[in-house]
Length: 172
Ligand SMILES: [Zn+2]
View: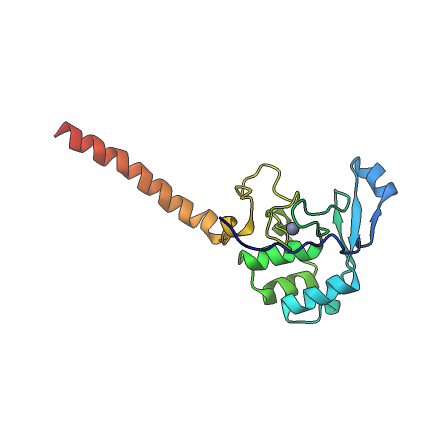
């Protein structure tokens, strides 16, 4: 049985956010800005080991209103997204910091996001569950981006060989 104590984050103040009415109408779906509070900014600085304010990022655009984690009640933040990427070794802190600073975000949004308060998967995840949507970060394990193509190709070759070998044995 798991004996890990999960901290109750229900006293965490709701971070600032805004529904972008005009843009939502324009794109036909709800768009929100989740602002980065001073407290979150400080946590991000600690995570990166560099001053997050250097990035000059004020928030993230998300298609969902702010939500609390259903397990520890922490409000979901951009911090969780970064924490997940670093925890799962998607990127080094330095690489990520520089990518954000230079406005390069690419398709990194596509990975499943876990709650930094308790490790539970959040609602911010790949829509097709292509990453497996493991229930918590420890089960999700490291995400090796290179592994998607390289390892898979080797696996396919290996599984292609196996049945042939089995047939030969039978026919002998
Ligand atoms: Zn949580």
